[in-house]
Image (cartoon, rainbow, N blue to C red; front, side, top):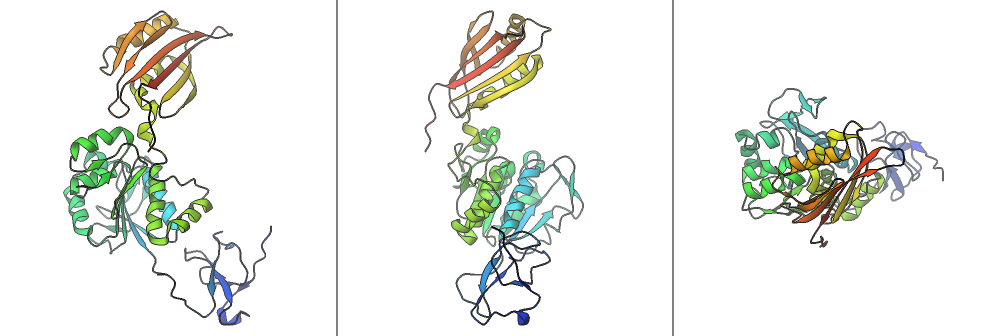
Length: 369
């Protein structure tokens, strides 16, 4: 279907009578923010769906005050932790600003430079404060200026929202006491041991305590941002925004990176990569995972397994039970996943090349809540 738009330059030029439905673009800063449309469709400037209103009548159906968001930025902050929530909040029509320790350019990720709108000292009152991960969230989460700021602002802020390792700012500020919390999968044990009065969860995408919201790693901040939007606009509107963004919004218990079986293998896969020319297969779920690699021809498969076994013996969580010329099998432990089994096998292919298969499986299968 093709929409045809009729744009009125000013309200007085429209043919709409008081009480007629007209259409506007949600205020987003585009060229058509102040224009009125006489037909349903999308804004020709920003492509957002036009919002119907009653011409000349303001019904008191819900608050029209635009939520305000402040996002803390610092050198080394993860790009997705910052930009993912920004995109969600902007599509929701929220006002978004950034703030930092100082009024100087900030480099997030490796090469993206941003100039903060405000500092800790002059940030106006906002409804939502966002603390991303990376950088000082992991190297200096107890920074006195940051923790003092969080403590001063928590009462006047409707939502305190951390992404990934940003949860460590909250832990150091003391606002996780008695709160459900999560973080990046590999940092969950540290969050749990560092803040024993927090309820640290390892099987959720994010946590929502009302005021305090925490998300697990990276893209999980997008899902948690939709949850925050739902607090202000309702779950239905938040889902519509996710649909418009072509994003499959996952709820709190829909997915947990920390529960995937590939978490067993991070250290050994680094060793295996020394001998591979390609890494062509990786697939699994919470209970098992399979990897397949093409091996270098410079060493025999038997020699590669000997080298791997020698290094695995130094890793306390890997217990080799059987070592053959073409296979290593045994048990593996993990703080979150529990005990599992593994096998590493070398296979010859039809073209005389060698391949290595790594397989891990939980002994006690994961049961979703």
